[in-house]
Structures are given as structure tokens and as C-alpha cells.
Image 1 (cartoon, helix red, strand yellow):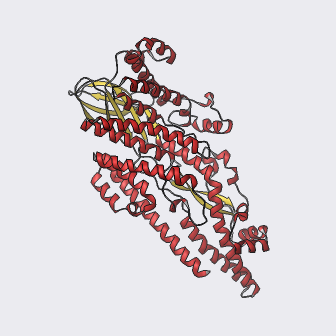
Image 2 (cartoon, helix red, strand yellow):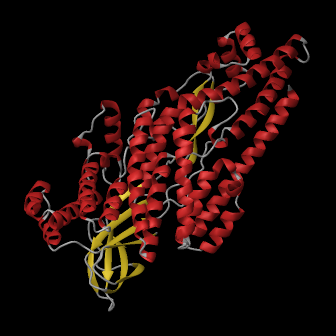
Image 3 (spheres, one colour):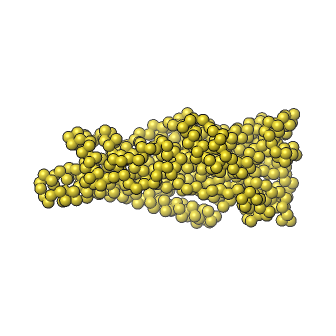
Length: 548
């Protein structure tokens, strides 16, 4: 038995060391990518443990696809993202839905399935890469492929809602609707523009409802979520919109009105009244469709961290299926097991963070255990850097400001990830806590047997027996702790926020600049130039820029 625990401990510590090494490597890769040192980033990725880890094959393709796209290697990027979506279909629809719990396998050592938002954004990146190749080649098959990927993205959410074991607030995505609308528009097919118009209307409805979940749009987002989770409906009183919500609403009003003007001109004035659109938005929309779409991918999504939680062992004792352990527990009784754990091994609830530190705390009152408890981790995002209101500037070839206006946030992935992972905590807490507690119970049983043996033999009294029991338990618990670290693997180069605007430009060379607002005061000039574009004609074109 001692030899078995020793070998198990060595194996678990080895696995923990590999996971820690990969985590450090991915941080270094992320830094190089952010600094736009793509050569170094590629070298780091190739040498990383991620490449060797067969359980993280999906994550490997997501990172490789993102890097290839940043390097303008479109064929390679498309290949990686197509493979990613094939893996998502295989892992999520087939394996994840039938995944069984195990005493010996935790999430960190299992396949990387990706969080729901990571699986979602694989569609965005494939659609973007296919569109970029269409811009280069003019091959309309790529444009059709991009359009088809948008449709698959929408189907993904339909499947997610059908298969979700618990209700999720992330049931669709604003970027799906808005970017999807733009991809349909560039086809220049009237029926596709009808689809675009509906997608923008869908986006406006989502902003008015689901948008309240996110702090970038709602200053009372936490209260909004709690009310929705408790009552099953939204509360307009708890949706206190921000300026960034207003910016996106104005942009969507413009998109709806400009398309209505183009394809349903007789309904234009009626739509203005229905939307209660601002006069300047209506006037701009009445001047005809824009031909330049600017998409900005800002920063990187906050990294996952392992957050500690307590779980009482008493509730897990009945789940033990080891025959020897079950027989022993039946002999001494559950109460004696918990008494021994608390008074001989010192297993009181740890000093963990309050469950009130996240918005789903009302579902987690069971965390406040007073009995013998173990501690384990679950992945969360504890801190999401706020995304500041930003102005975009377009300068002509003489460096004069041709256009300026708010640069709306369409989707804030940091907010999305925080909500999704907190939902996961609620749904995984009991399952994961029970699995980890069972491992600790087996270790406690082993420690009790050591204690009783030494007590019976009177080999030094209670002090020696207690010390030996403690040593037995501590050795096993270290292995459990090493193996039960939270699964913090994540798509590290996924943008935190996606912004979008569009404008009508004459052929020519333009510079794109940005600057932050000072409170509600708009900046007068750009503080940074993020890129340049060459407008050749009036055909609608999408341009993408990184934004730090």
C-alpha cells in the first residue's frame, strides 16, 4: 500500500510539473505575440509542451490558427481553424456530452474541450480568415465559405442551448450577429442583405436584453444577473446603461437604417420613428451605405486562474465505492471519520475567498461548510480589466481628420468568460468536490488504519500514532492536490474585446487612429495610429486591426 501511494504521488507530481511548465511557456508566448514579435512567438509555440500534449490538440490548433492569421499565412490559418471546428464537433457533441466522472481523472488531465466562448470564437476566426483570403484572391468560394461559417456559428449556439445541462446566459453572441451581418453584406446579393438587416435587428434586441449581463454595457450587471437567475426574467430597472451601450446602440441604429434605406427605402422614415434614432444617425444613414468596415481586436482575454473552494467530506462518504474503504467506514461510522479528520488531521474549512466574490454566490451557500472539509480548485476569471470608451479617427493623405466618432464595443470576451466560468463553477462544484473528497476520504481511511495499528500496539502512544497518521495523509493529499489543480488551459491569444465601426470613404490612402475618452469628453485628436488602409473603390470591404 505504501509503495502504491509513493508511485502514485510521483506520477501525480510529474503531471503537475508538466502542466506548470506549459502554463509558463504559454505566458511567454502570449507576451511575444502581444509585442508583435511573431517570429519569437512561433518559436516558443513550436518548443512548448502544448505541441506534445495530445490531450490539448484543440488548443494547439486554435493557437496555431491565430498565429498563422497574424502572420498573414491564410491557407495555414484556415486549415487550423477548420480542424478546430471538426475537433469541437467531435469532442463537444460526442465525447463531452457523454463524459463520465472518474476517481482518477480530473479536468486538467482530460481532453481540452474549450469553454463555450472559445468554441464559439473558432467560428469567428475561420470566417475572418476565409474573408481575408477572398480579399486577396477574389475567389467567391472563400466568401461563400465565410458566409457558411457564420451560419455554422449560429447553429453552434442552437446546439449549445439544446445540449446544455443547465441554462446559460451565454446563449448567443453580439459579434455573431454584427460581424455575420457584415459578411452577408459584402456579398452584394440582395437576399443576403435582407439577412444582414435581420441580423442587425437581432443584435439590437440582444443588446437590450442579454447586454445587461455585461459590465461594459450595464453598471448594475451583477445585480441584473442575480435577478435573472432567481426570477428567470430580466429587470429593466437593473439595466443602467453605460455610454458604451449607447455607442453600440447608435451604431446598430445606423446599420439598420442605412440598409433599410438601401433595400426598403419606402420604410426608411417609419423605421426612424420605430427606433427613436437620433437625428444625426438618421441623417448619416440617409446618405447611403458605407464602404469601409473597421474591426478592432483589443488586447487579450484575461487568463484563467485556479480559485480554491471548500467541500465537506461527510456528504461524499456515501459515494465511496472502494470495497475495503466502504467496509472500514461501515465499521467505524461516518461521524467517527469526520471526527478523526477534524481532530487528528486538522481538516477544518480553509481560509478561502468568500463565495460572495462572484455573482453566482446565491447558489453557493453550501460552500460555507462547518464540518471536516477539503479544498480544491475550479477555474475562474477573477479580474477583468475595464475596457475604456474609445474614439476612432480617420486621417486623409494630408493627415487631416476626415472622420471621427465613437468606436463601439460589440463583444467583450473578458465579461463573457467571467460569466461562463462562474456558471461552470455552480454546475461543476458538487461533481468535482465529490470526486476530490472521495480521494481524500480514501487517504483518511489509510491514515486511520495507521493510527489504529500504532494505538493497538501501544508503540509510543497517541502522539506517535497521530504523527504517523498525519504523515500518511499529508503524503497522499500532496499527490491529490498536485493532480487536482484547476484546468487553466485556455486560448490565450483570444482578444478581450471586439470593436467595430464603418464609414463611407472615397478612393485614397487613409490612416486609422484612436484615443481614449476623458470621462464623457471626446478626444480632439488621435493618440495612436494603429494602421493604414488603401480604399480603391466603393465596394464594401472589411479591415481588421489589433488594438492594445
